[in-house]
Image (cartoon, rainbow, N blue to C red; front, top):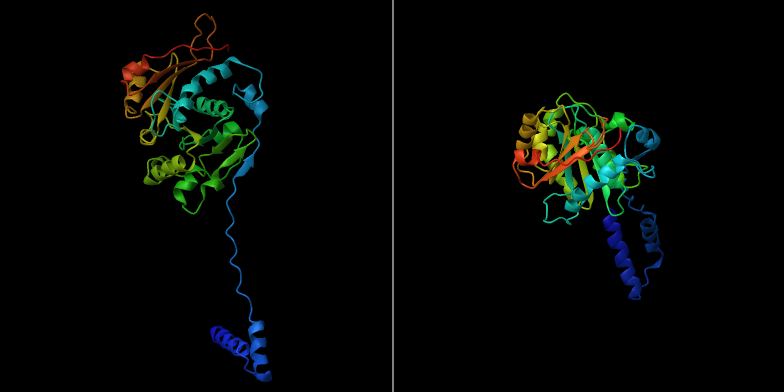
Length: 311
């Protein structure tokens, strides 16, 4: 109906311009045309916005975590040493180009070796850099610790992204008061959480993270390598892997077995947690570190260099 009215009104306008006197009979048609309602505007789809959370930096510092503006401490210096080669590889400044170098997995052979503590400290230390931003992902979905340790609110996270494709990644991310640090919690508990980590959806999500945040370092707190197979699947997507080993606890055979499961990863670092300081009498928190670039498990396990700090 409206199209017929429009055509009639256009024809009348053409006749008027040609000098034809149409008289008052054409006025009702013009009025009908003017009265046609405008097409309703299509509402714009709201852009998902990440939530903002306040980390208690004082409480974190009291628990031994690296925090911005804290007095200089030995553990902060240790993580400056540890992060530098990782950042160089992530930004393409290393001796050779590392594929997916901005994807870094922190894991261990067995539970309780300090991998989550290391992952959080590594992310915090990297976030203090002037030229890089960091996304810390809690991928230890069977035993998540990021939410509890950092005091985060319950909400969607990694598992929710794997289950529900309608959730945008921005809805699950948490921006923090550490300017360049963003968090992705493990999300809503799920009875098949470990299987989800090894699913095709996880593969697609990791690849999307690498593409979407090519200029960002993404640190994954992963399950232990010898506890489940999911960590090994996740490792296949990583450019760099940090394996945390607790001194005087983890067997050398366990370390070698764990490293053998990630031989395909181009860069592997071994961190010796709670190592005795070289000249210190006290048993201290410290880190030994070593690199493996495609080397064998036994060579990587033997490449630790002691770096210790006061207890």
